[in-house]
Image 1 (cartoon, rainbow, N blue to C red):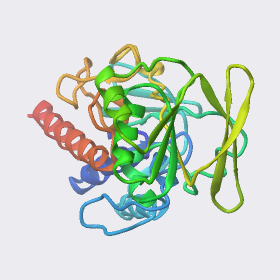
Image 2: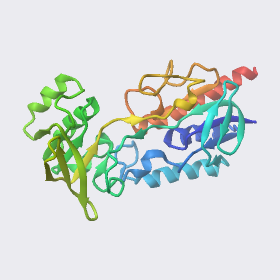
Image 3: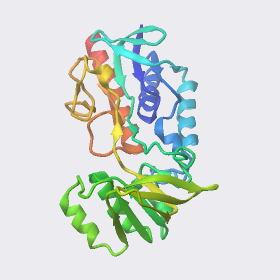
Image 4: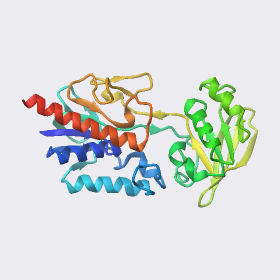
Amino acid sequence: MYDLIIIGAGPAGLTAALYALRANKKVLVLEAKNYGGQIVNASNIENYPGIVSISGYDFATNLYNQVKKLNGEIVFETALRVTPSKKVLTNKNEYQAKAVIIATGALNRQLNIPHEQDFIGKGVSYCATCDGHFYKDKVVAINGGGNTALEDALYLSNIAQKVYLIHRREEFKGDLINVEKLKRQDNVEFILNSTITAINGEDNLSSIVVTNKEGQSKQIAVQGLFIAIGQDPKNEIFANVVDLNDKGYIISTDGVHTKTPGIYVAGDTRVKNLRQLTTAVGDGSEAATIAIKEMKKDLD
């Protein structure tokens, strides 16, 4: 019997584990792949308070080591199901807890073209607010047609020398007011009815190939490519104990509680306005603190 099982070893999950361990709770962290979540792909983090610059890998490793130093148990197994009684079934075992925190994050949708993975952190990014600063006075491209892509383009237009906004359709899905703002920016160019079909470079990204619906292609020199075509939270396996919105994110009444008593949520996997490292660790600390408080109340 564990006091707390945390599903996911990203910043939210590991922060929750850290807080619970410091409260002398018996904690199990389940992770399907590698610790750290998507932050490990960040070449540099420069927007985290109190840290001037640190690589995503170093940040995640420091947090992982903090948890291990407190004798936190981290097991690399895939969670398959959670029951209302707080039993967690994995691909290898079954575990029982007094409380469960779901902190599985969300996966960025990818273009799924050659070399995309090779250039992550070397010109390819999925977060303009995280990495935009590194492209001051450089030429960048953004791929997407929703509000995230439009907002990213507006943000980068104040930093980069030139911004190409590439969308596969003629019309944007995002708010018209943002489209109009972008049209007024001298350094923003729309490339519509087109998709990115190739990513080129040696050590770092140097150009992309864009192909329109007629099959005509052109190469564009860019130093940065920001892919903003959405995220997939992969929460279907928890649908029996939580409510999901139409995009698959977990709905919480207050950012922590789910519809099932004793099952909580933290980080990018929940419905929220801002998905950043700072909000992930904030979610983790709050979820663990509330879970511990309510655990104690149940004992009283």
